[in-house]
Length: 68
Image (cartoon, rainbow, N blue to C red; front, side, top):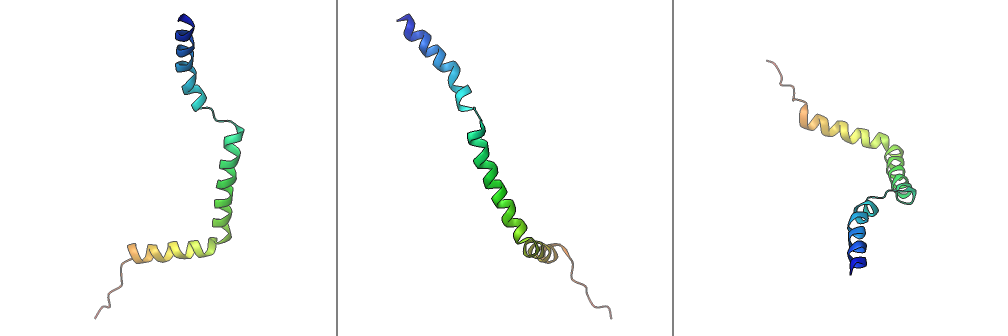
């Protein structure tokens, strides 16, 4: 009976540490995915920049009114 309590107590203390383990087997796929996203953005950088500039002009630049 005491053995079950010890194992249960050990399980309660180790579980958060095991769930928070971040090793190379988790980091490498994540960095690979981030590099692929960054590569795709850089591949189409001119089009992305053009889209951002046109959206900025539409949203924030005032139309010039003719003076008469």
